[in-house]
Length: 320
Image: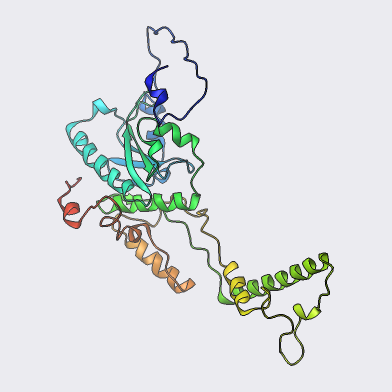
């Protein structure tokens, strides 16, 4: 067996057997989308991408995978890598650095692998795969295999990462189309009602537990006398003041599911004006503002692990 089967990054162990190498073919088969008329990348709408510009588009997988982020950079023009004119070739270098920095700025990302294979589709596409921080076993050439082996990351985190990358790219131009997951909120009265129901259910559960132990149980555990003084042991979970607080905490909304964070190009423009209006409208109707993708990246260029500063951003070559 070759040496790489003994590398720490090799994903498999146990008995392995080499495949028989096929004889070479005289003529290689056509790749997908050799003709622009049949190219899925050319026919895909902008809404299928997380960020678009005049000459480039960035898309993600259709669902979360095992890595924090997997993205694909595509040219709008139906060209392969060796067919790029000088302008697009120069811009490809700028876009590669930009997108690598954006992905590396995400929490929990140590490195970004940039790959181009080109055996499946004829339309130029570059892969960007984020390696999780501290996962040394995932270093090297087998990262794409580990992406299929590891359990998928939470969808809410995945959608938030997509929105952050799109907002980062939009700082240099183009249009972000990925939105962060919506915040699930409840009115204070709703929270109080939920907390009361959970406290009552906890008290009933305590009663049932005492019945199983054969002890005497007082109805006072779940009822109060007419003078309003609680009856029963104040140290029990269901009756103590701490218990009421824990019931309220338990009713807090779960983490955002991200079900509403689908890519949508409507109402989002390059300068973010529509985003500001939408955020103001949401704040007036719901008592709070939701972060827009552009606003989510206010701190991104200066934060994360990439160390990108404002001067670096201004010194970056402009894509015209």
